[in-house]
Length: 305
Image (cartoon, rainbow, N blue to C red; front, side, top):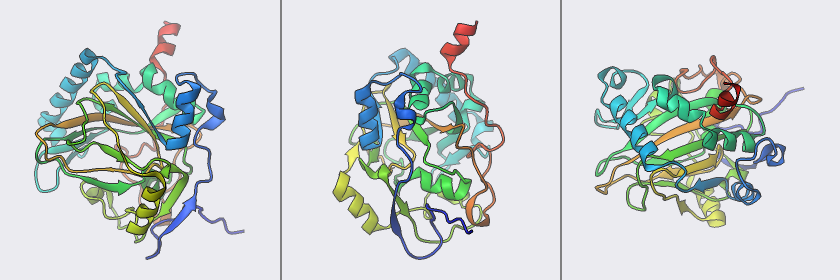
């Protein structure tokens, strides 16, 4: 019997919209109790959830100082983990920040974040990916519409939609400085994208994404159904969104920089298979494949101590 991939993508010049096959919230949201029933229902309906002022000004400043220090570290800036802006040497993203920085490692296990992930994903979790994102004023570039799961499924071999992203805002995100934009409800439809993925696509896609990009008609249909929401909030707020939620961001031509710490929690029951179509695995700093350690929440460690 031939087993077909229900989320097949990048195999031809055609596009398709495919209904999601998995739950959005696993175990009926009973695995942990970080969110109220109303918050769980909102996430399940929209594919994202904003929690305002979850971290204090002091906590945000300390983390912003850590990100600035990493951005100005010549060794990190010269490493593979550092991604620069298209056309310049300005650092755009730093990957695997939980392994490079102790404060961000603790952040990944903070009860305010990890228990939300555990509750929605219905299991223990590990970090599929982490990064710090910077979008400087006047020159921060846009990031086109995409579903993370489409890339993680195709290029990393992630089997199911059982992962979520968590973005802690380190600066105020307003309508002018290139905030995250999402299409509410889009997480219930998988967009199969056109084209054939070239080898080592990540070397270019982390700067400008050309493969795994939805076609205009599919985007139009999704936006007609759910609209488009600019996710704004004060520094210290946190955005959680489903791995299949369609999202992107405009360039930042305002004077106000935008920065966040971004973590992808994946269920321990959803570890990676081989990438699709014979592609070579992406590096470990982009997609955790070898060191899939279960994250221990900080409050659990404190209870043991």
